Image 1: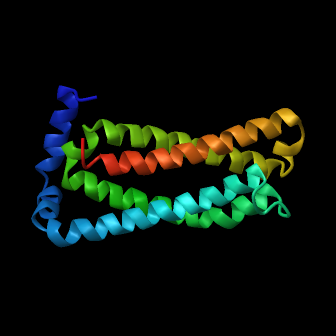
Image 2: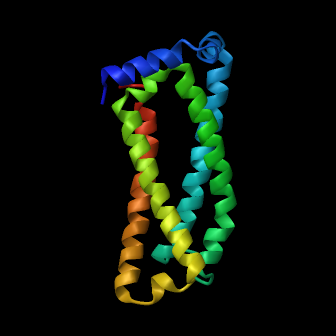
Amino acid sequence: MRTAALLNFCASIGSTQLSIWIQDHGESFVPAVQVIHILSISAILISTLMINARILGFGFSDRPLNLVIKRFSPAIYLALTCLLLTGVAMIVGEPARSLANIAFQVKMLFLLSALLIFFIFKKTANQDPQYWEKSHQRQFFAKLLALTSIVLWIGIVFAGRWIAYL
């Protein structure tokens, strides 16, 4: 969604000293930031895949879901922090390329949805470790959410890659 207000906002970000510095030092700064961003996405992707594998019955079946989530949460939180910092740096460096790009907007929608699923699992499993196993309906819904999460994370990777081309 490209609106005049969004493009004006992008122009105001692009005229800041930080944006100008990033643009002037792009040859070394941007690739380093992108590497950290990609490694962070990989850490989240692997961590959420392990949690989803547990829910789908493909791994860690001998451990309660809350312990699997607890094990991978620190990696997810650290990677999210890195994603936020590197993402903001990339946006400040080229605001219109990101904020006004449909691929970026889809990526953010997918990211919010995937994180919502993670936090739903985390909250319910912490309150009641057996919550998702108490009925066939809950098991089915948990598996549906886990599959949706996997699809969303794959979508995040693809949408992120498409930012450069749209």
